[in-house]
Length: 133
Image (cartoon, rainbow, N blue to C red; front, side, top):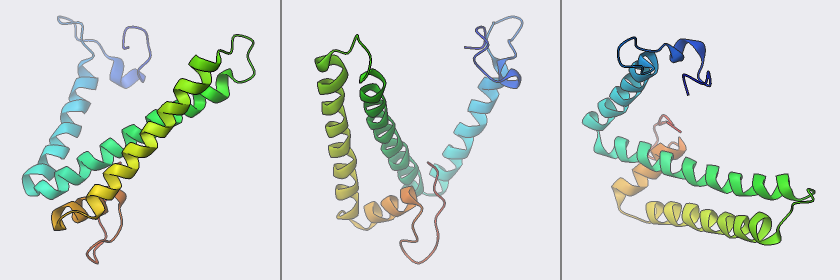
């Protein structure tokens, strides 16, 4: 991505010897260190961040399916199987996954409920949590 100029200019600086985008790597190290610091402090907090990441992934996949249907709806190369049925099944599957994750975490044990509150940024136990989505 750095060679194709798809990264912001600051992140696309290439290392002279290894030809890697070393500034992007340092940003990745910093973000990973922050997540690790949360995990060292609280396993519940780390699991809450993981839950938020999983929910975000399923929501993004569902939106991608919706965008596929919308993008191909009026085109002449529209194929009902590839551009309507399969994305429709993807939307359904992602909604089931999001619902299942939320259901299992909300009705689970005390730690699971706390993790669900952390991932959604809701008060939960009376204190506001930070949402890391």
